[in-house]
Length: 266
Image (cartoon, rainbow, N blue to C red; front, side, top):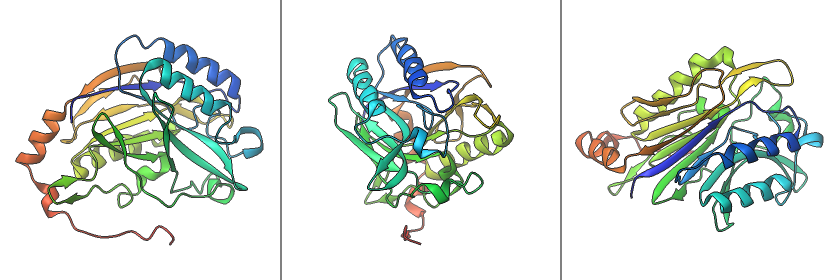
């Protein structure tokens, strides 16, 4: 495992307007002029967090997916983003991990937000997935998933950790920014892994403000990067594989973690 170059994009989203959002991200991605391995976009990057499938959901090979495929190829970097996907008569809040050669992996949001009735309209995912980028094992979660530590719990078996980086893509409101920042640090420390949380700024279609607070945390809970509250920012930084390995080898908490299994159908 070598160092990982990570780019985070914190920006406003245009409410239920796919064309404006794709055009905006086209310009933002073109501004990345340094080498990077992984680019992270906020949750529902193409529409904002709408629960209106008729206006926002697309098939897997819709225009937003084609956009991500083209930009990943152009930037020679993996891109992670979420969008609403219609499939088999159901709608999913789906995270796409797309690689420069065009192949991709997906994760469907497990915990659907009750206050927005997301849980009544979308279908929850049932699988925890690990994506590999440059030898790094990456565990993806989406927004509300961050509140559930069991779902994102790291593992240690036969001398190996389940993942090295936890990624959370979100539309997390400003009124709960303290919770967002606190949980990101907690997940890093309890799982002995880097954590990257990418959040939007601006008001959504309901007038709900979002402060962003995009950040990267190391396995000790130190904040390596914190975006300016409420401002559009892009940042590329390097995650040190050596620092993570040294810390894990010197503080072997993982060896004492409890073993358990999750029944995702409950």
